[in-house]
Length: 132
Image (cartoon, rainbow, N blue to C red; front, side, top):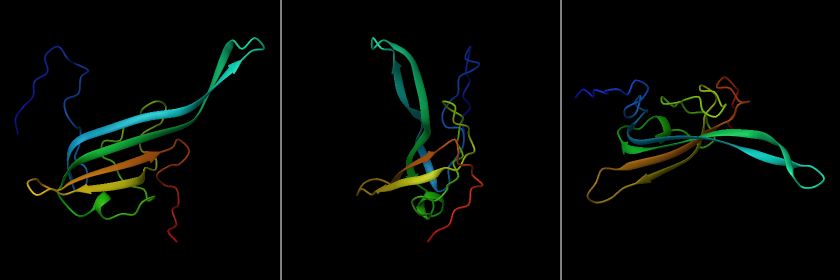
């Protein structure tokens, strides 16, 4: 493994922080969003805003290197994300739901996977899940 030296970049981060289960990561994306409602006065001037319904989503893509993790679980089940981060007021370590998985196989390339996940501030990773 080669060393990367960051000069005069004390708070910068190089690359991807940790491996994910069964995937050689090419790209990791985390995004925090929420709903908003502007509050107008009687002259329709916006005098306030209500923010609510926060959610954090992740997208991970890369080469398939195993058969566990997102490759073996069901949609809607909690999944561990090694690169989980606090973002936009949604803390890390919450229950992260697997939303969808896509596999791409091409004749002249390694198989690739892309999977999307989401989590919510009110659902912790210790929440009970019952599969029926």
